[in-house]
Structures are given as C-alpha cells and as structure tokens.
Image 1 (tube, protein in one colour):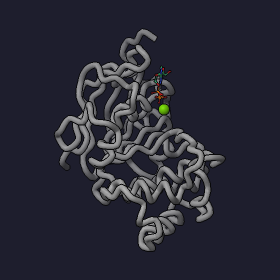
Image 2: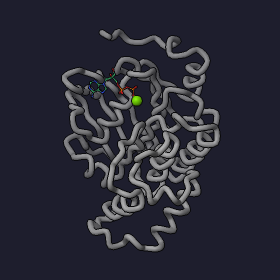
Image 3: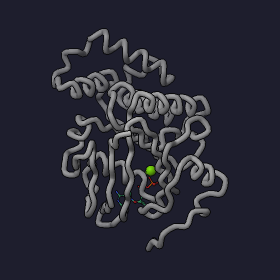
Length: 254
Ligand SMILES: Nc1ncnc2c1ncn2[C@@H]1O[C@H](COP(=O)(O)OP(=O)(O)O)[C@@H](O)[C@H]1O
Ligand SMILES: [Mg+2]
C-alpha cells in the first residue's frame, strides 16, 4: 500500500513546552493505523500538529503527505490537500447553522468560494443520507454548530464530515468517547468503510474497545510524547488486558 501520511522524528513545542519528542509513524492508503496512549501522552497534540494548528511549533522532524512536506502550510491548505481531522472536542460556533457550515466546507473543497449551491438538491440529499448513516436526526441541520450538542451528537457530526468531505487521510481523535454501544459500532463501520474505500485512517484512541469491531493494521503507542511500542492488533489486545503499565516507557521528565 503506498504511503499516504508520514511523520518523521517529530518534535513539537506547545506554549514553550516540548510535548512531542521524536514521533515516527506512517499510514498507507487502505490502512488503519491506531495511535494509543494514556491521557496526556500527546495524541491530540500529534493530531493538531498534523493539521497545522496555530501554536503547535514543529522544532524538528517532518510531516509528509504523498511524499511532500506539509509543515509550514496553513490548516486550510492541508485540508484542501485531503487531510481531515475529526476533533476530540469540537468547538461550539455560534451564529452558524450546521447546514450552512457543511455546505460551505464542501464548496471550499470544490474550490467554489460562494455558497450558491446552498440549495443544491444532490448535496442536501447526500447530507440527509449521511445523517441516517451516523444516526442523527435531520433537525440538527437547523441548529447552531455544536451549540448545545450532546457529546454523542458532536462525535456523530464529526464522523459525518469524514464521509461527506471524502478526504484522502482521515484522523479520528477519540471518535468513540461518549458514545453508547450502537455509536461505537457505527464508528467501527465507518472506519471499515473508509479503509475499504482506500483512505488512510489514523485512529487515536486510549481504549481498545473499538478493536472488538475493527482490527487495526498497525498500532503505535505514545507515552510521554514518544513512541513506547509498535505492533499490530495483538499489541492493542495486550494493552486492553494489562494496561499501559505493561509497556516499557522511555524515560521522561514528567
Ligand atoms: N495548549 C497547551 N499548552 C500547554 N500544554 C498543553 C497544551 N495542550 C496540551 N498540553 C499538554 O500536552 C500534553 C499532551 O496533551 P494531549 O496531546 O492533549 O494528550 P492526549 O491527547 O494524549 O491526552 C499534556 O501534558 C497536556 O497537558
Ligand atoms: Mg486527546
């Protein structure tokens, strides 16, 4: 499988503190790569850095998409090149309806800056279909973006966008947190579908419960901002049974 996303010796500083200290991983097209690690190990920092979020300073190393460095590109440019991040905790945005937001992001992707396709029945039809697939009611479209959404509704909306935008590389940051068993199954189904469609999927999770429904091809474990272990699905099972303590952590100063 050709490599889609590659992270090389990544060192990242946030608010003057080094959070990632040498992370290497790669995800191929049609592959599911799980990044695991205890709370505070740097998983979300990795996701934000890949997306180019402001304040996440790359001190050393590189991030390549299709073999080309994307470090230095602004987040919207990375999105245009096919990266999508489903946020662990998406921010609430007042005054913007979900329907308008979804149509705007699709149009941006297509290079159409205007919102003239707001009423395009094909696009709306597709959104309705995806709402059903992720288990959301159509009425969410009329609500302000994430304002008053439950944790589960936020997660489902983030997943919907992963399907709607058809990115090449999908990063899912704890997509199953706060979801019930049906929600977890839905997320697993979507991950399988993305992988089968040939997308590169980077799944960030601190539990292994999703792996009851979908097996990762590769697993990388972060502890204290560096890679503590690598393996396949069996590594995720080992963590589920014995916890992160079973994995020898490299020396950290925290
Ligand atoms: N904006 C920030 N400023 C300072 N420290 C941060 C910031 N964001 C995260 N951190 C710290 O970085 C470490 C890793 O956080 P994070 O990437 O969110 O971990 P995870 O997603 O694995 O739980 C934590 O110690 C956290 O406190
Ligand atoms: Mg996190």
